[in-house]
Length: 142
Image (cartoon, rainbow, N blue to C red; front, side):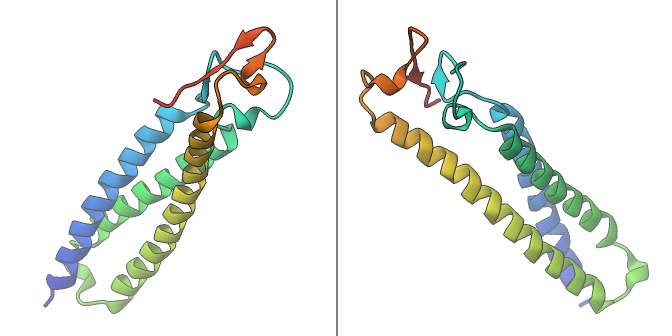
């Protein structure tokens, strides 16, 4: 029984670390990315046309917390000196629950950006919305 919950914690921590690193990589790839080509440069609501810096930094922070939690779990879980301390299991279950809520919030935030791109794709490309300073912008769905 001593290694039962530890093995589960270690396996979950490895998965969590992989997902955290993947989220960090994904966040860097979309940081300040434009939704249209060429990128909107005029005055107005720039969040409609590109990924906001605040959302990107929020996602980067969340991904760092997820990866950090996984590293701490990988450091603490295999220790024999902890014995069968239930507080360790309770602490990690509680932190995992909170990090799951944080990850859910980030997925909803990024999902709203995806819905924005999807809605921009539904607009007729000849719509005056896509003309700015004599340039025609095209939605970049990649």
